[in-house]
Amino acid sequence: MAERQIRIYGDPVLREAVGPLHDIDGDVVRLVDDMIETMKAAPGVGLAATQIGVRKRVFVYDVGDGPQAILNATLSGARGEWTYEEGCLSIPGFSWPIVRPKEVELSGVDLDGSELRIEADEFLARVFQHEVDHLDGVLLIERLDADQKREALRTLRQRLGPAGGSLARSGTAGSPSQEGAPGGLGG
Ligand code: NI
Image (cartoon, rainbow, N blue to C red; front, side, top):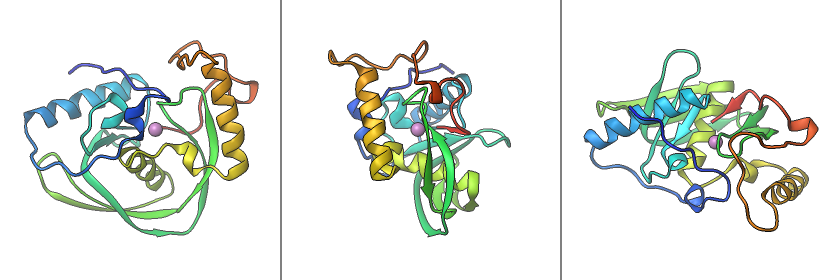
């Protein structure tokens, strides 16, 4: 297992949507091992393959019951509405209250190729939506309302600087309200 570098906001791979995997080979098994190690080290509750620059439809998560890997995930059955403070390992130091469906149904396969169907609500549903968004090339910024998004983009531009620097994974200055621990979810 090896920890991989997490790609940070501004990296174009984070805007790429990835299609389904067709073979679960040794590369995928090693990828999942590395993703779990990277997620634990961050630490985060979820990590999508594109966040380490790998264009495969794979994500891992751990909501306290041990790490799990989901391949070829899709979501359906979105119901309700739930607001939750959400952060992202690819946008370190920031979190925003984001409204998303409260319940979703995830379909996918596990590492053994067995089909999975998981009905999730609240926190787990939030993790699934965040990670599937990553695999569709969508960052949580896109889930903000118009005012939040304008403010977030302004802050991110300031942080990135006119020279187009990048967000450091550590030592980011942070605005006072966003300093310290990110929200309850970093994935
Ligand atoms: Ni994320």
